[in-house]
Image 1: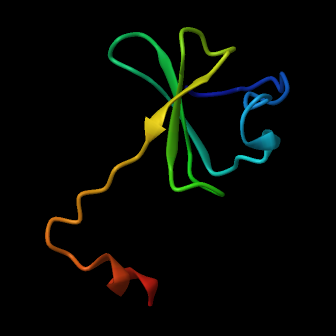
Image 2: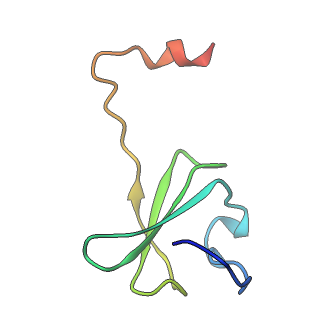
Image 3: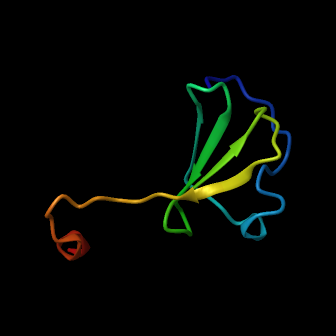
Length: 75
């Protein structure tokens, strides 16, 4: 997913009122495309068959703290 890039508009047109940010894009092992939005959410993954969308919500990122008290990360 390296550039150069051409701005083709918003990929989250029908999701989050187009306010998602801190987006990461990847191509999955299955050949699909995923974007991860974490800016104003708890971390959500959207999937599409093509890099042009339409991206559909796959689910939220789940974190296993492995015994770590996540509250300690607030400081």
